[in-house]
Length: 278
Image 1 (cartoon, rainbow, N blue to C red):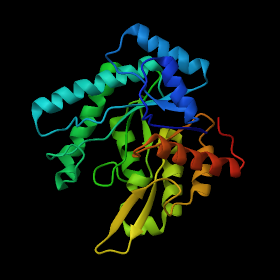
Image 2 (cartoon, one colour; image 1 turned 45 degrees about the vertical axis):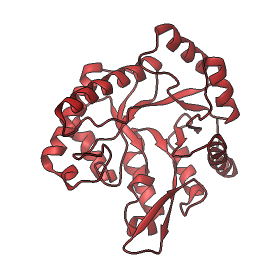
Image 3 (spheres, rainbow, N blue to C red; image 1 turned 90 degrees about the horizontal axis):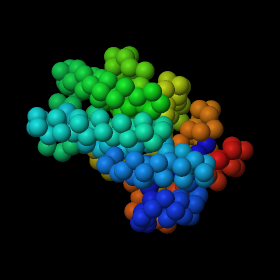
Image 4 (tube, rainbow, N blue to C red; image 1 turned 180 degrees about the vertical axis):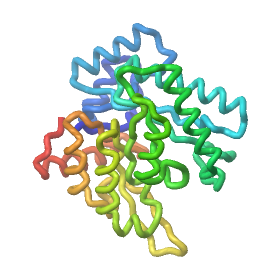
């Protein structure tokens, strides 16, 4: 297992970057440099990562390729292609985005997100992005979300079948799919279903936690790993079955210290389960 997360402290070059990585004891990282960087800069970061046995686990996109604004959607699709090309160049495990929304907020909840024509648009757009780059080493993936597809393992499997591209893989964020009281209360069973159905396609994992408050009608909140109700002893064992190099990223934290705390919790939980953490 490899553990990583965001780096909050600034850096100006590969040496400073690796100092930050080692402070956090990461062995997996997000892309440390943008697609507009020079060839020499990219090469320097790639070599630094290899020399220190650190893998670049994912390149993030975080743009809406199915925006209602046609020009915005076009621009975002081109950005997706550039980021996927960067993932291929860096040898990253995957490039990750969300499917996007059909409303003003790029990652917002709208009933139109679930329309059949929107599903077809997602399939076509994803194919276009992948086909334009034709990656041989990396994968284009979609992060599950609570209020847009894919919001379940079965819908993700349907996307894999319908998109029908070898370079389409799974980014597994099981926490984002815990979007109902039943999934929260049966989180052990639901998370195992996620790994059973999607594990073979998984290229990267986001690790978070959740709590459900006794408020009406229902409030499920994301929290740092170890501060919620998810069974991380069971989760790290499921992750371990995917292989030694699977990257597990903590996210949505505010400080260097919080990232250190969250990643340390997962590392210590894994070690206590006799799992090797690189």
